[in-house]
Length: 242
Image (cartoon, rainbow, N blue to C red; front, side):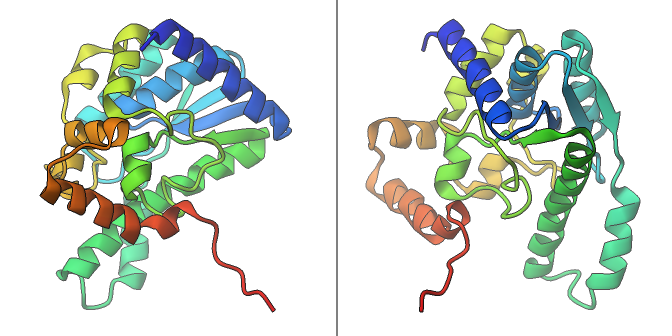
């Protein structure tokens, strides 16, 4: 991949999309992960005077905020810290009932965290006249590894056609701090959680399948089953036709 060409193309694309929407800048969540760090640097180039990164810890690993701040410092990105721990606790107190230990309860709590992060992004976007930029990549979108109306609730997704290794290539080219490039991808939903562990599929295998259509038979069936089961996440809500 020609990284310089891709960076230039994506920066222009972000500018065009945001301007066409009548917005004057961008806001995005900075998780300290690979994808959001790459998006943050692209947005910094697209809107150097009109961007805001929001760091939103919610019982998160302290290293995540440190990594987000390291990116912000290296690339002069303005940020706001919005801690969501107490908001999350309050909602759980109201909502959780007696199912806090169940598997569905764990998934509901995890999705609640992700959906909470959407709220500050749109709050600041509304206040500033900005667009909300998401950091989902092609692998995550393909198999539905994102939360509907959470990290999927954004205005534009610059990385949506890049597989994970392509995002990693851009990160190296953009001089993202090496510890961010090297650490296991994680949504920070619970201690020790990793994307690949939760998906049950490696990014390397997903990259290969999406770029070539090739995968061992069992893995191919697993990937395609995930794609089919989560197809609804990639579509607008169905509207009844009369």
